Length: 119
Image (cartoon, rainbow, N blue to C red; front, top):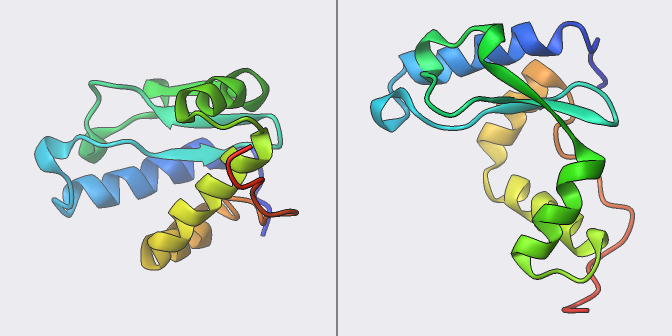
């Protein structure tokens, strides 16, 4: 379910605080992020605490700039392989993925094709 892009930062802060205040993280650290639209996502800045996060501590990132970096870092030869990896990561944590999707909408979009098996 798509979310209003203007609500994503406040809902991300809300969810991050819930995780941080529940003490599900060590020292209140950890990363949270939320997709604002098809081109941009917000991520919690390093050094900020989940339990006390504010919107000013979110960094806006652009998929088109970061996915090729992640692809190279993971050793994938295609963006499709990287997308498949991200999808599998979300499937490994169904309870967390369901809670995040309930709050922020579809964080990890559905796959349109499988991996290239090591290409």
